[in-house]
Length: 596
Image: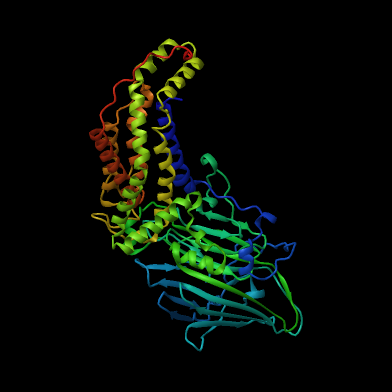
């Protein structure tokens, strides 16, 4: 394979990767994890959740689909607020659970569970465990918690104790007591976790979803799972709900791009259910940021499933659940994951590129805290560091490319001589390269090795709440496009404009496209490159500019700085090195002669 074909293949791989890791998660649904022994929790998770699971987990009866919270609205809703340094928690008597969480230590206003059909840890399963749905709320004696209790007509008493802790944690205990004087049959229950919603009118909702962990791996359920479009945009009947788990649900997290509400039962739940919900349309000032014909916003709600059970007279059942309601900060989640032994940091969804994303995120935070750099300059510094690490490899590649260019006359001679014998021509070219110690792949290896770095950077920036609201020069938020203004009347431009509003003017992607064109001018196509390949390379900057136009400014900043550093390196290399003279020696036409 010649160098030109290799470059085209690398460009195609980059575009395929961009499609796979940026666009596909928005369109195609994820699939549930397979049940069975392969979903058994790990030893670490089992130690954290000490209850024995048994050799054969019980079959979970599916509760009635889409159960709702039925409450007696004739009873006024009672709200109790409890706060600490992390957040303000609002508990409601309707369902006896956590209704809303307002975070106090983040760099932006954040409210979790703001639009939800039921509060967190509401028991959804009709009158048998719900009654009229109205609980009595009281503060705990230390003022740091809330108790919700209710006595049902069938003799069941439900007591829920919520105690605030540090690091955005709430420890909850739910106790079911049988005071009926006889055995009590309880049906399967769904314990509500929370609702994942977009962060605002500018959030497309692509990061909204539910993630759950079975002790070995995670399963992600996003809005795409409920789409009426399947593979290849073929129409399909969307599922009403997602159901998974086989007595191995270690935690369930309803999340958006930067925040999550996770439920971690001490004993793994039997199953998990996820549904799509329609949310209220933005009103007031927020409504101006959304197209008038835009679809209603959507979210995902999640619930843990517990099987039916039989409580004897005066018997009780108690379950403990830890709730994390806070930002997706990797270091905080990693500490909690170590504390509970449940890998909670997987909520970050770094995926395959975690080995790149985690060091990049930790490095960016170190530069920010130790050197007092803003996050924008920290991104620039990381880009420079990455470029310096790759410098020796790029220099070796540049030298090899120059030797390849010097061999072009001999390569053309071989191509002309053996044009009717392609296999022999390829062998002769390999002999020529081997004699002069050059490799056709050496010029492309730096490009190949930077592909995982790019996607690792993308995954890091996609989840790094540190960049949310961070400013850099004219950029107001590194987590969003750097829109300076909106050009009205251009709402029809595909992929770029806001329908019914206009075309955002994002300056940084335009600068990035310009740097790519500049870099392409400094690296002219190799002699003999196919015209089709030359056109592809010529329009590649335009393709990337369109692809980056609506992505976060932090990622575009990284790519722009990387281009500028590549341009500077190219110019410096040309200054420091002389162009090598054409390789001497006859063109190889046969096997090398042995010396006597």
